[in-house]
Length: 78
Image (tube, rainbow, N blue to C red; front, side, top):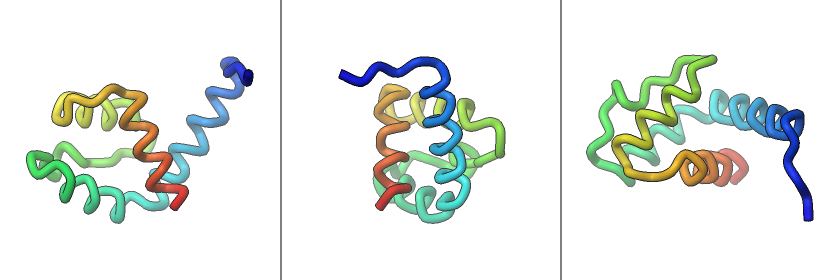
């Protein structure tokens, strides 16, 4: 079984951030469709503040951090 070490986690997180930045408008629209209670302020993306964005989404959706990141990964790969 593959184990994640800190370097692997950092590489994965950086790739996720790049994908998030590149597809943000599309992702934002999909999130608004799925979660009608999200506001533009909730979905404000600031480069370097991805953890704050995930935190706001956790609070509004009740989802775990890993679920949100997994959803982003799925959306940015497809």
